[in-house]
Length: 228
Image (cartoon, rainbow, N blue to C red; front, side, top):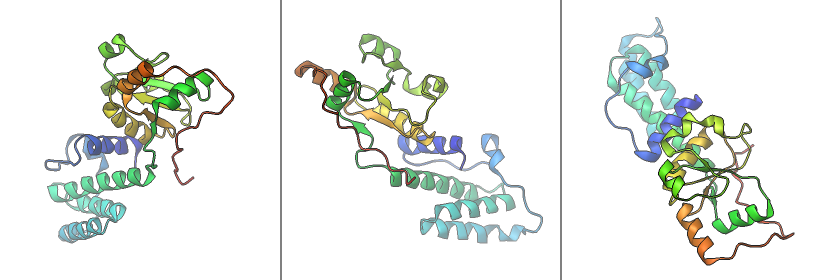
């Protein structure tokens, strides 16, 4: 599955939870229609649709996706196969993401982050995904402000290495979670959220003394397991 396609589908999963409306072969989705095969009869459309539905029900999403594409090639004007195809894409992308999700869910506790900064344990690239006005009112030193909805328009501000440690934060971690999913789908392997967001960071700094640098290594967040 193409990266851009996976990213768009994952955004739909996180924000909406499902896809709505009828399918269409017009516009931006037209380029995914396979070339109709002259050997395939239009009479095979509904059997292919039924097969795709059965595969989807048995959680074989990749096969359901391919079968739905075959049905679309036979009859690109009916919405049923389109709807099945898009549901299979969503399910496959969602299943891939959930299978790769570590127990830590990519959360970095504030106290670990502060100790990292003091001891220079990890060179975090810190991305603040709040709005510019929020950033101007207060932010973590060294953070780069890329508002949540503009993230994909400023990928040039992210590190060139897909294994560089990136820390995202917003006010309470909600917007940063959406951004994290998108960046993971783009191949950034070490992206984390600041647990609790900037609100938790401010609260921690208010009630705790900043630790002094020391030789004791700071425990890091759980590394994601991508089966590599």
